[in-house]
Length: 356
Image 1 (cartoon, rainbow, N blue to C red):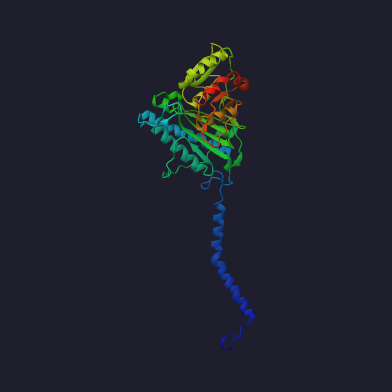
Image 2 (cartoon, rainbow, N blue to C red):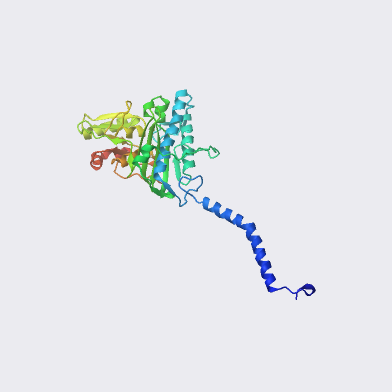
């Protein structure tokens, strides 16, 4: 019985409830729709503005190649600007395992800043490893217009892979020692993309000549392999500081006519194995490194060689994985258009020096 003898009609109660539901729907439908839209827009997407590392988002390797080329070029602009202005602010950042002093300049830092933030903004879901530390308080915003150059569009098809399988390796200034000595021809900026530890995209840019080589495994490239090789006078390119270690063994293996080419920078040495239209680029048949080397130094070159049918392995012939630690302990030997396995078998003694 309702208060004061008023009896509520079942029909009236139903109408009242429907009116109440109508009011609630009107109030909350916009809110719920907005939340749903926010949820949908917040889903991680390849190259989108948001995303977390380790997510299940996919990334398009063609887009990643395009932004890697742009990053290497923009980093190169900083490298050249600092060198041209002669304000290197050079300092030591430590010593190599061989006891040589490792140098750091403003060119390294500014190039790294530009390259890292561009790649991070374009692909926030992928892991990025760089030679130089990134200031976590630096909130520089670098946008990518998502433009893919025509030469990449013509040769590379879109290909998606899980973001969690991708590791990007940045070398913002390869050949810093030579950079401080104003030996500009050796200097490069490099980006490499590894998928499940295998290098699949490589970009090598020469800031002082504006030359850029890029390649994608099972995709295409803008550079070709050198086809000429004279086994009677092979040319072996090595680090300037390692020439003496390699020369004796190389001459014993290939003969006294073997040519040893001392050079700076891993990127430059890989380009020496390719058909590069550069007046300051030397040519070689084999690239050998006999000591520990960092993976950001060699990943891009490894990817380019793989894309062109070449090889880069440790001195014992093991493939180099671009996951885990940032160093490669086994030295390296790189070649193209050669019997790589037979080449390794000719140089067994070099592996002994790789851990020194």
